[in-house]
Image (tube, rainbow, N blue to C red; front, side, top):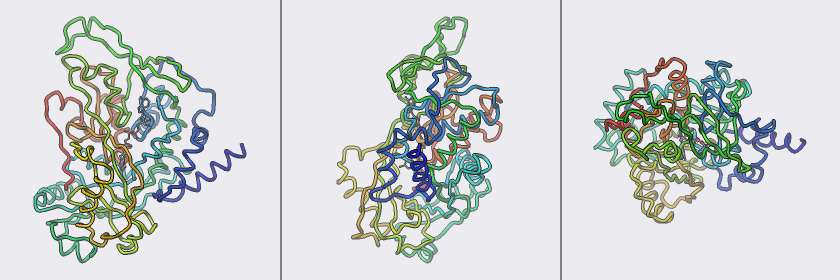
Length: 467
Ligand SMILES: Cc1cc2nc3c(=O)[nH]c(=O)nc-3n(C[C@H](O)[C@H](O)[C@H](O)COP(=O)(O)OP(=O)(O)OC[C@H]3O[C@@H](n4cnc5c(N)ncnc54)[C@H](O)[C@@H]3O)c2cc1C
């Protein structure tokens, strides 16, 4: 008990500082050693585990999106809906190691993403009101500067015009204006820039996740430490559906999950939300998605992409306190590491990931280093350390999130593939799913276009947030 109190104190102290990376990342080290005690700290598993046999809604994955969904469903329906979250890593040690950088941006071209990001920031700003007085997500406003090459300058200008219509406050900058504000940026091959003037910045991602999990639990969600390993289906001979031979329809009605003791249970549900991040594609296969014919012939195209994060030692002293988050024309981003004296950078993984064949050293030497030095010449000769290698969910079809019921399994709601902005959009995605389930339609932001149907009709929905 004394140990737990001490542990809580240490962890609280650590997470109360805005999340930042260190070379040796002492918090992650400590976390790894005592991860088995974490459920206690999170308030999970205080009681003997319960393995419910039926529930209204089962959510697969208790990360940002799964927990935001549980939170919203419970906030709106309270005891009217019973909700179980099946989370295979209840210590969140993988998320803790693989944690999002907590960057918030409004630079999107699809209205759906603009509105989701606006709402995400609003939710985060009011985190205490939404999640509880003890939740401090440490929102730190900061400009986000997007750079466009000649090829994309027109597109950036058009996007910014549209964004202004949606009420965003963005300012276009010429290369000279960029230079006079940020002389450490080389603008030789930059045609245009755009800086966000509000609702952008950085948040403590771990504190946000913890706040969502705790609030969802307080509202009555049950978190179960278990890995989903299958679905059970039942034949419904009277269902007639286009593309499905009469009498053959099979409805999924149970999720099979395995507990840490290697026991298997099945839970019956009315609706199931698939929010398992980069593992969602594999889990969908268990419901025959992409494994059968007709409406089940198209897979859920979610895969993982490796993401390397680097620290550029001592360089923040040169760029100064008003260093914006920079998104380069190449997809390389750079930002301050909060108030530390290093900068962080990484290259957003692409849908077509050709770099997989390169060794880590060659990836840095051939891809990162030249891009970094081209845009930020001061970094020539700087000490650059790879501080982590993380996995991101990627929709290999069009790189935009997939949201809503599956066309065959209309009680399976997909919420995955949100890639690099899943943390920021999670509050809006959770609210949207609660609308689909409780109101039977989107009532705040219309996210119909994010549905799986676009894969059926082969109409990609491409987000063009410039590089
Ligand atoms: C390096 C990096 C930086 C990022 N930076 C940002 C950023 O700055 N801003 C931003 O908005 N987003 C960022 N993201 C993206 C963001 O982290 C993701 O979009 C977000 O985590 C997606 O949330 P999720 O709930 O879908 O998935 P996750 O957070 O990955 O949660 C999925 C959960 O499902 C669980 N699960 C998986 N399989 C099973 C199973 N079979 N049974 C039970 N549970 C299962 C996992 O354990 C996990 O807890 C970043 C991501 C990475 C990797």
